[in-house]
Image 1 (cartoon, rainbow, N blue to C red):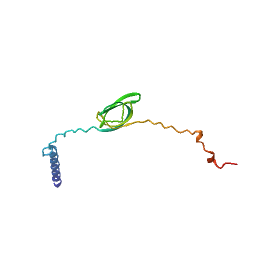
Image 2: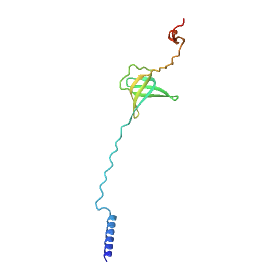
Image 3: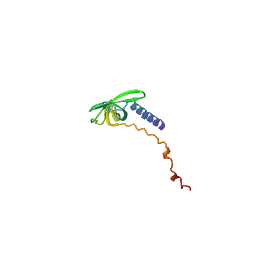
Image 4: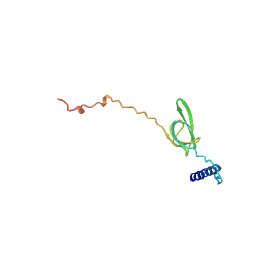
Amino acid sequence: MKRLMVLVASFIFVFSAYMSAAEGPSAPPAKSEPPKSVTMKPPKETKLTITGIVKDISDTTITVERTVKGKTESVGFILDKPLEKIKIGEKVRVSYIKKGDKHIATRVTPFDVKIIKKATPSKEMKASPSAEGPAKK
């Protein structure tokens, strides 16, 4: 008889737990917040350098033409301050920042191509007789 009572009590307990779980939580669900507004990130700054020939220059802009893999392209840059020493037709190196579609020149310097040749020994460069050792008599 005790076993039957324990069995019935456990059956009632399990059945009531099952029914309360099937009904779901008694508290109302929490209100969901509306999605936050999406903020736009500012465009990335990219630092680059190119070398080319000056095609046009003014107080606020400079246009440089360069050749890459046989293709010639012109690139325009915005200047912070006017350049006095740079002239049209001069080869320059431009360091710039790319913000979106804008190219802002940070530094414009003349670009000199220097070819270094190895020195070849000439006849005059040979060791002198005094350096060879004492002279024989």
